[in-house]
Length: 321
Image (tube, rainbow, N blue to C red; front, side, top):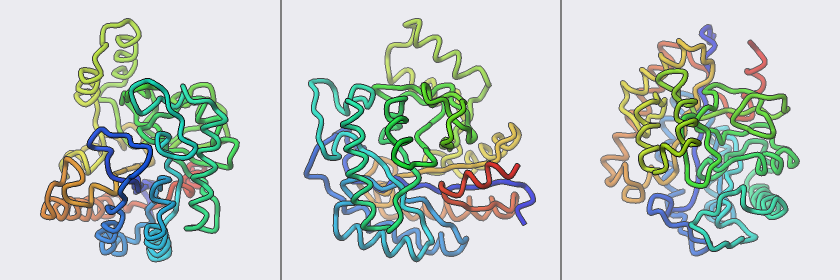
């Protein structure tokens, strides 16, 4: 009956290999990891989980991947969402700066053309145009917000609270539960019609994000690595791919104590393929991750009678307070 009112979203960035190597190639991208999504089949079917498969352009234009995702969409009652890797989605935009080029430095008409090309490929997997979106590297600011707002996207999930990625915009102070964002700064609540569903990361103390943001602007934290370490120390993520089972459980309890009604977890499709990510170098490690997911989902059901939903279903339950 979901008396607790806890809504759980399982989102997967279905994308090409290479992200964890630090390379951002414009072409010649391998997508062999996508077939490993089948490893989730027994878990999703056991708990009736409809995942949101946020799919990149390199995957969406591959005929074999299209067939795989079409089958899994039907089998899992999954949602196919859009996941824009702006560095390798046509039309390619090159600049003489460190890749990936921050989205706020790419002309809006180019970003729009990239997103339209991604949506066009996704229509071969699902007859319905995607209404959910996540930006690659969480590189989401007002320019990208304007693009997807004009293309029928209803739900975005590009906010990673208390995280700082190269090129910005930073989301250090973004809320941890869904909200309607400000179009001029999507990391802040506003009056837009779109719903922002952040991945669930809570600050250890409420002021952590503000403190780090002020320190960054004052020039006290210039090194991205140091900022990343501080963000990690000062946050409590509900992300089983990053943390232990007990830490993920503690993150949910903490989130609920703060009044959180939605738990949004994410991981990468390549984390299911041994050797294609830094966390799971062997098949045994992948299987341990799957066991952890099963135990985590079972705990969510037993403790909270959790309701598993897709990103496009979030607005309905967001309104049902």
